[in-house]
Amino acid sequence: MYVEVVQHSDPGLVGVKGKVVWETQNMLVIRSVKGKQVRVPKRHGVFRFMRGKDLSWIVNGELINLRPEERVKEVSRRVKGGALR
Image 1 (cartoon, rainbow, N blue to C red):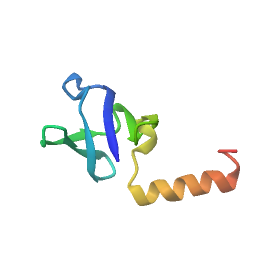
Image 2: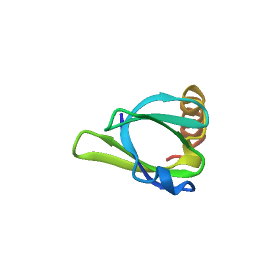
Image 3: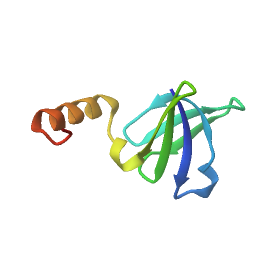
């Protein structure tokens, strides 16, 4: 999946874009278009995730500041509870 850092508390990370190669609870590791791996804290950023040319979405890092497996459980819990309907 490709991502671009749209906003961040660290202005040096704004504009970083590339492929997500690793994810932890608090961090995205992005391989930039120049081939450099950049560690970006999720909590203080806003990200544009891109799937192909026609599909993208903007996500506040606070909402994805979970381990990937916990995020799946959280979304499932919210759907069952009616919070996302």
